[in-house]
Image (cartoon, rainbow, N blue to C red; front, side):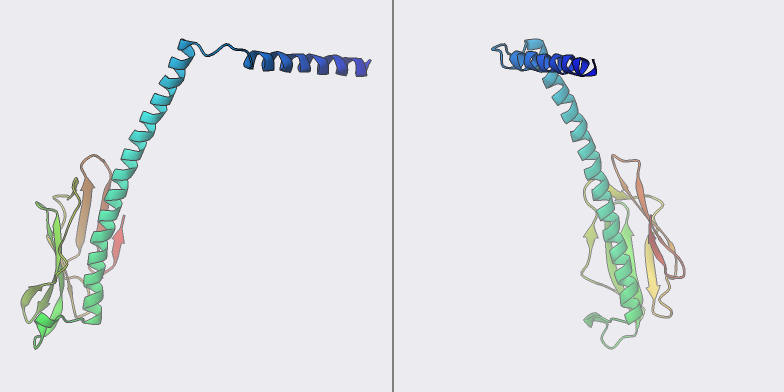
Length: 180
Protein backbone atom coordinates (compact mmCIF):
# COMPACT_ATOMS: atom_id res chain seq x y z
CA UNK A 1 0.00 0.00 0.00
CA UNK A 2 2.86 2.33 0.66
CA UNK A 3 4.25 1.74 -2.79
CA UNK A 4 0.87 2.56 -4.29
CA UNK A 5 0.75 5.89 -2.43
CA UNK A 6 4.29 6.69 -3.57
CA UNK A 7 3.45 5.89 -7.16
CA UNK A 8 0.30 8.04 -7.05
CA UNK A 9 2.25 10.90 -5.47
CA UNK A 10 5.05 10.57 -8.03
CA UNK A 11 2.64 10.38 -10.96
CA UNK A 12 0.83 13.44 -9.60
CA UNK A 13 4.10 15.40 -9.54
CA UNK A 14 5.06 14.25 -13.01
CA UNK A 15 1.69 15.33 -14.39
CA UNK A 16 2.05 18.77 -12.72
CA UNK A 17 5.53 19.13 -14.19
CA UNK A 18 4.24 18.13 -17.62
CA UNK A 19 1.45 20.67 -17.31
CA UNK A 20 3.96 23.39 -16.40
CA UNK A 21 6.25 22.52 -19.31
CA UNK A 22 3.35 22.54 -21.77
CA UNK A 23 2.22 25.92 -20.40
CA UNK A 24 5.70 27.39 -20.77
CA UNK A 25 6.18 26.04 -24.26
CA UNK A 26 2.80 27.29 -25.48
CA UNK A 27 2.64 30.13 -27.96
CA UNK A 28 1.16 32.51 -25.42
CA UNK A 29 3.32 35.54 -24.52
CA UNK A 30 3.35 37.91 -21.60
CA UNK A 31 0.46 40.26 -21.05
CA UNK A 32 0.94 43.99 -21.06
CA UNK A 33 0.23 44.15 -17.33
CA UNK A 34 2.97 41.60 -16.60
CA UNK A 35 5.49 43.58 -18.67
CA UNK A 36 4.56 46.87 -16.99
CA UNK A 37 4.97 45.31 -13.54
CA UNK A 38 8.39 43.85 -14.42
CA UNK A 39 9.66 47.14 -15.87
CA UNK A 40 8.33 49.07 -12.87
CA UNK A 41 10.23 46.77 -10.51
CA UNK A 42 13.40 47.16 -12.59
CA UNK A 43 13.09 50.97 -12.55
CA UNK A 44 12.53 51.05 -8.78
CA UNK A 45 15.53 48.81 -8.11
CA UNK A 46 17.72 50.86 -10.46
CA UNK A 47 16.80 54.16 -8.82
CA UNK A 48 17.50 52.77 -5.34
CA UNK A 49 20.86 51.45 -6.55
CA UNK A 50 21.75 54.77 -8.15
CA UNK A 51 20.90 56.71 -4.98
CA UNK A 52 23.00 54.32 -2.89
CA UNK A 53 25.93 54.67 -5.29
CA UNK A 54 25.70 58.47 -5.16
CA UNK A 55 25.78 58.45 -1.35
CA UNK A 56 28.67 55.99 -1.35
CA UNK A 57 30.59 58.14 -3.84
CA UNK A 58 30.19 61.23 -1.63
CA UNK A 59 31.35 59.27 1.43
CA UNK A 60 34.46 58.11 -0.44
CA UNK A 61 35.27 61.65 -1.62
CA UNK A 62 35.01 62.90 1.98
CA UNK A 63 37.17 60.04 3.27
CA UNK A 64 39.83 60.66 0.59
CA UNK A 65 39.93 64.41 1.32
CA UNK A 66 40.34 63.72 5.05
CA UNK A 67 43.15 61.24 4.34
CA UNK A 68 44.92 63.85 2.17
CA UNK A 69 44.74 66.46 4.94
CA UNK A 70 45.95 63.93 7.51
CA UNK A 71 48.83 62.99 5.20
CA UNK A 72 49.97 66.61 4.96
CA UNK A 73 49.86 66.93 8.75
CA UNK A 74 51.95 63.76 9.04
CA UNK A 75 54.43 65.11 6.47
CA UNK A 76 54.86 68.27 8.55
CA UNK A 77 55.43 66.21 11.67
CA UNK A 78 57.83 63.83 9.90
CA UNK A 79 59.89 66.61 8.32
CA UNK A 80 60.11 68.35 11.68
CA UNK A 81 61.25 65.17 13.45
CA UNK A 82 63.85 64.37 10.79
CA UNK A 83 64.80 68.07 10.54
CA UNK A 84 64.52 68.15 6.76
CA UNK A 85 65.54 71.64 5.72
CA UNK A 86 64.64 72.85 2.21
CA UNK A 87 66.98 74.99 0.12
CA UNK A 88 65.19 78.21 1.12
CA UNK A 89 66.47 77.68 4.66
CA UNK A 90 70.17 77.38 3.83
CA UNK A 91 72.19 79.19 6.47
CA UNK A 92 69.13 79.55 8.74
CA UNK A 93 68.07 77.48 11.74
CA UNK A 94 65.15 75.13 11.15
CA UNK A 95 62.44 75.81 13.74
CA UNK A 96 59.56 73.73 12.41
CA UNK A 97 56.77 73.24 9.88
CA UNK A 98 53.26 74.67 9.76
CA UNK A 99 50.10 73.74 7.90
CA UNK A 100 47.72 76.62 7.20
CA UNK A 101 44.00 75.97 6.60
CA UNK A 102 42.04 78.50 4.57
CA UNK A 103 38.42 77.86 5.50
CA UNK A 104 36.95 80.15 2.84
CA UNK A 105 38.75 78.56 -0.14
CA UNK A 106 39.31 75.03 1.17
CA UNK A 107 43.01 75.35 0.48
CA UNK A 108 45.68 74.02 2.83
CA UNK A 109 49.40 74.34 2.46
CA UNK A 110 52.65 73.51 4.17
CA UNK A 111 55.33 76.01 5.05
CA UNK A 112 58.66 75.78 6.82
CA UNK A 113 59.80 78.07 9.65
CA UNK A 114 63.50 78.94 9.48
CA UNK A 115 65.20 81.74 11.39
CA UNK A 116 61.86 83.24 12.40
CA UNK A 117 60.60 83.44 8.79
CA UNK A 118 58.04 81.24 7.07
CA UNK A 119 58.87 79.92 3.59
CA UNK A 120 56.21 78.19 1.46
CA UNK A 121 56.79 74.56 0.57
CA UNK A 122 55.36 73.71 -2.87
CA UNK A 123 52.56 71.47 -1.64
CA UNK A 124 49.40 73.61 -1.62
CA UNK A 125 46.25 71.54 -2.05
CA UNK A 126 42.57 72.37 -2.32
CA UNK A 127 39.68 70.27 -1.10
CA UNK A 128 37.49 68.80 -3.87
CA UNK A 129 34.25 70.53 -4.90
CA UNK A 130 31.49 70.17 -2.32
CA UNK A 131 33.93 69.43 0.52
CA UNK A 132 34.97 72.14 2.95
CA UNK A 133 36.61 72.90 6.30
CA UNK A 134 34.18 73.49 9.15
CA UNK A 135 34.28 76.96 10.74
CA UNK A 136 35.59 75.45 13.99
CA UNK A 137 38.73 74.12 12.24
CA UNK A 138 41.97 75.58 13.60
CA UNK A 139 43.70 78.16 11.39
CA UNK A 140 47.06 76.40 11.52
CA UNK A 141 49.03 73.61 13.14
CA UNK A 142 52.74 74.16 13.81
CA UNK A 143 55.24 71.45 14.69
CA UNK A 144 58.40 72.74 16.34
CA UNK A 145 61.81 71.07 16.14
CA UNK A 146 62.16 70.79 19.89
CA UNK A 147 60.23 67.59 20.60
CA UNK A 148 58.22 67.80 17.35
CA UNK A 149 55.12 68.66 19.33
CA UNK A 150 52.66 71.07 17.86
CA UNK A 151 52.77 74.46 19.49
CA UNK A 152 49.01 74.22 19.40
CA UNK A 153 46.88 71.13 19.13
CA UNK A 154 43.50 71.28 17.55
CA UNK A 155 40.96 69.77 15.25
CA UNK A 156 40.57 69.93 11.51
CA UNK A 157 36.96 69.13 10.60
CA UNK A 158 36.22 68.19 7.00
CA UNK A 159 32.58 68.17 5.79
CA UNK A 160 30.67 67.41 2.60
CA UNK A 161 27.72 69.53 1.47
CA UNK A 162 25.25 66.67 0.98
CA UNK A 163 26.15 64.53 3.98
CA UNK A 164 25.61 64.81 7.70
CA UNK A 165 28.89 62.93 8.18
CA UNK A 166 32.09 64.72 9.10
CA UNK A 167 35.68 63.59 9.37
CA UNK A 168 37.67 65.00 12.28
CA UNK A 169 41.46 65.03 12.40
CA UNK A 170 42.67 65.65 15.94
CA UNK A 171 46.23 66.73 16.66
CA UNK A 172 47.11 66.55 20.35
CA UNK A 173 49.65 68.83 21.99
CA UNK A 174 51.86 65.72 22.31
CA UNK A 175 51.85 65.32 18.52
CA UNK A 176 49.55 62.32 18.08
CA UNK A 177 47.34 62.54 14.99
CA UNK A 178 44.01 60.68 14.76
CA UNK A 179 41.35 60.58 12.07
CA UNK A 180 37.79 59.82 13.13
